[in-house]
Each structure stands twice: as structure tokens, then as C-alpha cells.
Amino acid sequence: MTDRLPDAALDQLFREARTHNGWSPQTVPPALIRELYEMAALGPTASNAQPARFVFLVSDEGKQRLVPHMAAGNQDKTLAAPVNVLIAHDLNFGEKIPQVFPQRPQLRDVFAANPALAKETAFRNGSLQAAYLMLAARSLGLDCGPMSGFNAARVNEAFFAGTGWEVNFVCNIGYGTDENLFPRNPRLAFEDACRIL
Image 1: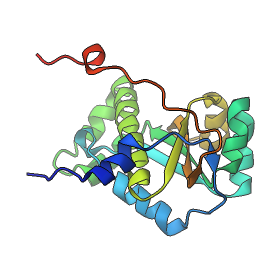
Image 2: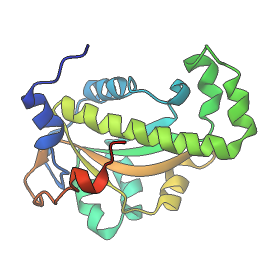
Image 3: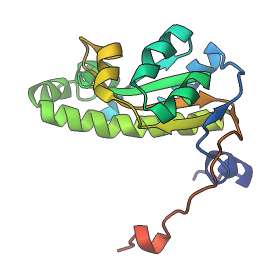
Image 4: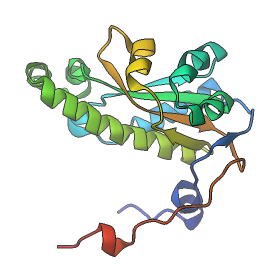
């Protein structure tokens, strides 16, 4: 049996964690970015397919390629954040199935023969991996600011042309400040969102 996490850990991951809009200029070391990915990669996905792909923008050049495609309200915080993560999924993830799911290497051909299934699987499981990445970031002392206000077609063209990768959303990561930190909005009650059958 797995032990319940202490309250301090639950506070850091969920109860006190916030979506950040303001950022300290403190950089995120490359070793921490690597650790962040390696922790997130341990989360479960269907057939261990791991379709998510992450592009960590830390350079001014990378940020300047991204910012024109962000909604106006997201541009300044994108430039201020130490790291912008393009969270994408690879429609050709099936090519890696023999490597990551050696128990059933034939699934590579199943996904190759059914692009609709591959797209659905990539989006669903890539979204799972995106959530794992944000929880891993919080567990390592980083803050997150996920954003969906951007032009996906332009981001795909600027960063993923000629690949099977498609962007899902963008997440700023770093050390958040209280600048433009909104009060926590209400959450749906259990009775409004859940059923036990």
C-alpha cells in the first residue's frame, strides 16, 4: 500500500498551488528541466505510448519565435517566464511502440493503419503527460502558468513544420511571484461534478 502524502506536499501540489502570471527572473537550470521531464515521463499512458513531446524555450530567440503567436494578454508573461514549454503530441508516436512497449510491438502497425485512433490516443495521453509535467514541476519547487490563448496553427508552423507533432497548449514554468495573481476561483462541489454508482 502507498502511504498518503503529508499535508505539506498536498498543499504544494494542489491546495496552495496557483496558476502564475508573474515570474522571478531566476533561471531554471538545464539539469532541473531534465529532472522535470524524467519525473513526468514516469506517469502512466495507454500502452506506455508516451506521445507527448515538450519543447522547452529558454533562449530569447526561442521566446521571440513564440510570442507573436500568443494572445495579446499572454505575451508579456510569456517573455517574463524563465521557461515556456510547448506541450505537443506526436501523431507518429506509434513508431516508438516497439521500444517503449516491447510486450506488443505489433501495436505500431495498428496505429499506423488507423490515423484517427493514433490522433485520439496521442491527444488524450499527451494531455495526461502534460498534467504529469505540471505536477512534477510543482513537486520540484517550480510554479506553472498553463495557457491556451495562442494560435495553434502558427505555433505548429513555426516549430513543428515537417513533423507529426501538434501543439496542445503552452505552459510557463519558473519561480512565480504574486504579481497579477488572481484570487482562487470557485471549484465545483463534489455533488455537481461527481457520481458514485
